Image 1 (cartoon, rainbow, N blue to C red):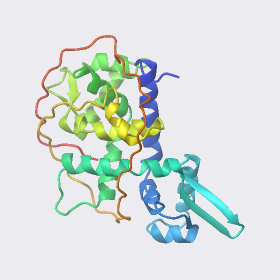
Image 2: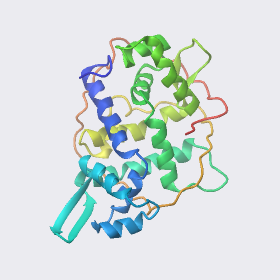
Image 3: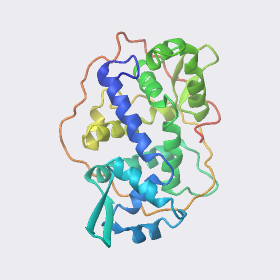
Length: 280
C-alpha cells in the first residue's frame, strides 16, 4: 500500500528504509548487534557484554531482533543455546561507520570526544522522526518545495497543514532549511550529507551490497554542500566494542533510474545554514 504520492518504486524504497530504521533505532539494539558481531554467544555471555541492561530487558530485545531477522537463536541442546547475527545482521554492520562519519562531519564536537555508539544512537534518533525519510527524499530530489506541495507528496491523504510539525522538527534538528515562514524548504548541509547513510540503508534494505549506494537514483549523486552548522550531544553512555570496518561485494543495483517526479524544478543554490544545528 502506497504511503506517499511518489512513484511506486520510490515509495517502496522509502518504506524499506523506514522499516530498517525502525529495526535498529530502539534503545540498546545497536549495542546488542555490536556485542554479537563476533562468534555466537550464550545468553549469559551476551548479558555480560551488555551489563548496563537491567534484568528482564535483554530477552525482549533479543526476541525483537530475532523477529526482525537480524539475530538468530540456535538451540544446540536444551542447555546450550547461542545467539548470533544472521547474514542480514552482518551485512548491516558496515552501515554504522557511515553514520559515525556523518556525525563527525555534521555534529558539533562536545567538550569530550563522543564514543562512536553515542554518535550512532543520536544520529538514528534524527532519522526516525515521523515522515522524516519521505521529506528528506523529496527535498533531495526537488531541491526546494513549498510546505503545501510537500504535504501533497508526503502525506496525500492528510490535511496539508499536518506537514508542518514534522517539518519544524526537521528544521530544529538541522536537517532542513527555510529562509522564513511561508518560504520553500530545502535540505541543509547536514541533510544533504546524509546521502551515503541513506543510500547505504536503501541498498541494505533492498538486499544489495553497500557499494551499490553510489548508484542510488536520489542519494547516489551528492551535490555541493553549504557550510555545516553545529550540534551539541547529550550525556555520555557506556561504550560497546569497536565498530567493524565496512565490507562490500560487487553486484548490479536494483533501483530504476527514472524521473522520480512528474516535473523538475530549477536548482537554486543552498544557503549556508544558521547557528544551531542537528540535535536530539
